[in-house]
Image 1 (cartoon, helix red, strand yellow):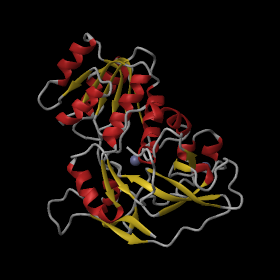
Image 2 (cartoon, helix red, strand yellow):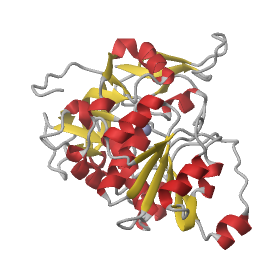
Image 3 (tube, helix red, strand yellow):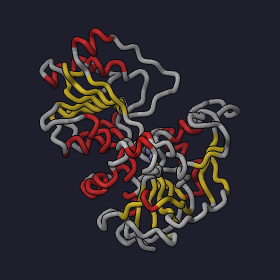
Image 4 (cartoon, helix red, strand yellow):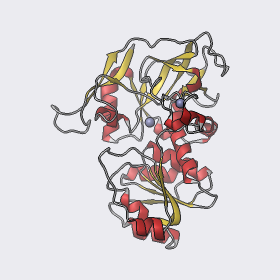
Length: 355
Ligand SMILES: [Zn+2]
Ligand SMILES: [Zn+2]
C-alpha cells in the first residue's frame, strides 16, 4: 500500500540539500482489519502544519515515518463487530487519527487527550487505505464533499481551541497566524459571537483571506505596531481572548501584551521542543490575572466539528490538490506558503458535486 512518508530526517526548509529532510512515497504493508475496525479507501489527505515537524524528528527519528491525519474517504470494509456507529461499506467518512481507549484512567476521567494508549491506532492516512477503529470514524454530512471533508480534523482543533478560550458572546478576539488552523478558528469564533475580530498575519494574501471570512481587522506585525493597533481596536483595553495559531517563537511573547486584564490566552499551535518563553508572573498573572493554556489534541470536538463543517467557507483551503505520486512536490508547495492548504488526492473517487 503506497503511503506518503518522511524518508529522511531534517528540516524541509533547509537550503542545503545534503541535510534537508525528505518526503517520499513508500510501500507499507496493509494494516490488519480487526473485528472493530473500519478500512477506508482514502480520497483526500491534507498536509498539516505539524507534518514538517515530524520530518524534523519531533516524534521520533526512525524512518520511514508515515504521514497523514487529516483525511476523508469511503468505507471499503468493516470488521465483523464494527457496527456500533451504524457505519456501512460505501459511506463517505472522515475521522480522528487518534483512538482513545476509553479504559485507562485519563479516559475514565474525561480527559481523553491524555489517553495512555493514544498511539495504538495512530496509522498514517496519506495512503491508499487506512484502517482505524470504528470509534475514530465519522460519516460526513451529505452536503460536505470528500474534498472539504478532509478538513474535519483541523476543524476539530479549531473547535477545541474555541472550547479552551471559554469565550462569551461579545468578547473581543484576536488570532495570531493565518494558516489553516488560524482561519478555521477565525470562522468558528465569528459564529461564537466574537467582536473586534482581528487577525495578525505577515502575509498579505492571508490577511485578505481573513477579511473575506469574517475578520473585522487585520494587522501586519512587520509593517505595523501591533500594540498600537490593538489599543486602537479595543479602546485601550486589549483582547478578552487571544489565540496563537502561528507557532512562531517570535510572535508568541507579544501576545500577552495585547491581552486584556482577565483575558484567556490559548497557545493553540505546536512549538519547537527547546523553545522557552519568558513570563513575568507579577505583570501577567498577578496584576493581569491572565489564563494561559494550550491545545494538544481534540477529543470531544469531532461531533461538533461535523455539525459546523457545512457552514464553514472552505473553498480557498481546497484549491491546491496534488496526486499521491506528486507528494514530494506537494510538500515543497506547502513549505513555500503559496497556498493556505495543500491536499493530496490519494485515490480518484468520483463525486458529482466536487468543487
Ligand atoms: Zn493537523
Ligand atoms: Zn485511554
